[in-house]
Image (cartoon, rainbow, N blue to C red):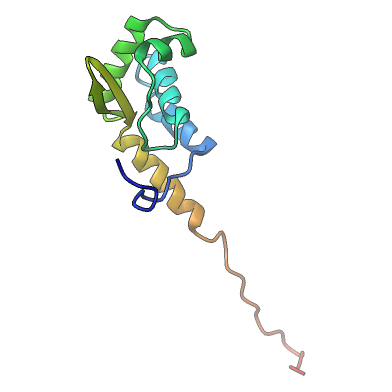
Length: 127
């Protein structure tokens, strides 16, 4: 476990990120997006979600079997990664694909929208 001083700067969660996730997972079954949405909104991005698949299933109103299959597909595609296991129960966090999309959005947010330069006007003297 890392201390707060060692934790990397948190990536921002935004509506733009959710839209990108929706677009990128459009080819996957609909339950996958619901499960992924749970994982990326439950805790700050990159941290482990300490909820069981049974809890996720109850929250997003789909069966445990469907959640398990969705998690398997999301892990296989890099959207989720296993963080650790307690006994036989696995816990997950957002995968590299999610973090990359969030980082791209964060970099774009830090760029200035525009710069303004004043051009000299003819006939106007500097006073």
